[in-house]
Length: 557
Image (cartoon, rainbow, N blue to C red):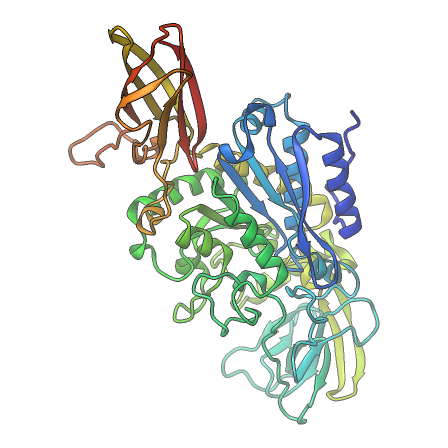
């Protein structure tokens, strides 16, 4: 077997990504299956990789873990992490104890590039700072106003520095390449307005209108609280081929017990809720999110925060239609959104806010600028140059290339980011419920009459229902236990019984106390009375859990 060589210090285009996925599937045919979930507007495949050891059971009878990446066009680092996770699981199977155990016991579903059309447009010059899915070219979904374009022909869409006495920006006194904010009450200087580089449709000569984009913010296209007011939300929930393919994929795999969706905005791990404060969440769900998030912080270095509490700039306008809220709020799946990469942290700036829409001091701007020059160079910063704009007159174009600075790391830093985040994915996957038949006993009561007693347990960290939300929504299916065998006739108790849910060890964080959380059972017994003429007959007890897998134990009467 020849293991494909994949470089994780580069950003792969669609052709290269497809080639790597096919090569991995060909090299590990017993563990990996590559499928296309459908086609994009421009005819590209939406790839999914399923990884498990089929010799240890069917995929749908094992706990599932789901990873997706690059739902937004410009978030290229996310595809690198997903590709690395696929590569790591396949190449380390049989070598690494944790990987081998998880691939044997569980199934991984990985969608490494959900939005290949948008990614391809954003990955090539002029590097659009854009999240659309290619239904339209960047900016051309807007009826009027500014349309981002490379108007100066340097191969980059950057910023226009427009002289304006009303402007809120000025050149730094220490370095005129750096723009800093004008102070309240400050007068008497040269001031500017900053706009994305481009031309203005139906310009009235006064106001530079910038419409919110319509095209494909796929992470606002999911059914939970969907709203047309959200930018890029689409014509209706799941109106876009990519989000529809994702939703069908997830709904068709009810064994998914954990989920991570990758983005690139600030080096953080986002947890629910997106629309309500922690005080409105189930306390038990909140506790398990904080416990798992602490593991994520230890392994990745990223803090785990509430999307609503700490990542919503205007709490009167929470954001709707996201994948994470759909999979948790509706299905009760333990779901995170990891936002890779934080330029300011790397530059040594103290992190005082998690969302990047905030004012920055001149010292912060200078520190970030120096880091970009030293670590990214011309690909991250373009010198300002004069340009005669056909509508705005004499201006300058240049400044930061947002996509290769604030949005994605330099390629040389990618592999370590991939490694750390994959480590958390594996640990999150390992927290899934794991239902096993611990023991089966047969006791002869009379000739041909036997009492069968089985003990079924959850050996996992999370309960078989995963979350309180899953119970509240009625989507958490109870654990089922059945008995069967040739010549066996069950005379008392149904052949298949439901035993409710089994707790995980997550609720047992300290020794028992009458003042603490009261423990729920992790194990339950099941009994049957059976009749069998042949005392040498075998019986099989099967325990089945939608999220915790299927397990059997066989014994003789």
